[in-house]
Length: 142
Image (cartoon, rainbow, N blue to C red; front, side, top):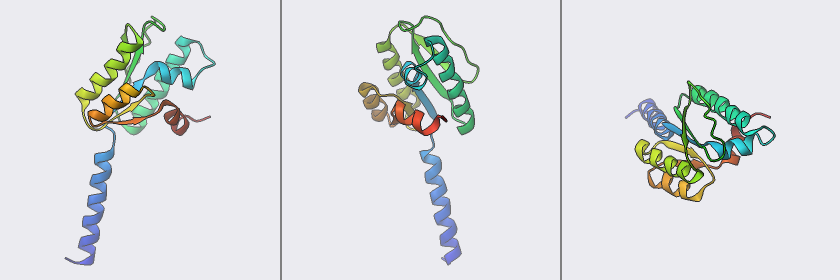
């Protein structure tokens, strides 16, 4: 095999590896991200800011996004055409729902959470986890 053929094969291999590592779904612990990212806003406004930000990230990286929120924190249900928003009764159910969604999506999902049970569940189903602080620090512009 010639040098250029080997070089082409190596490039194709690296491209395939990058595609494999690319997220296929973004799961977000909505209330945790909203509270950490926009603490100066009231609950409704910080949830909407989270949805707006997540919609931008979802569009930019071409990855569908799922945001789970609990009605025990605020019963108002924000809406979005770009982000799938699910409201559940309690914070505990919100965390369970993230793990259920990770199981249904399988490998390729990225979860944004600090909750250890969600981290374990997502990793068990082949997903990756980013802490809420790291995700906001990395992606949120000042």
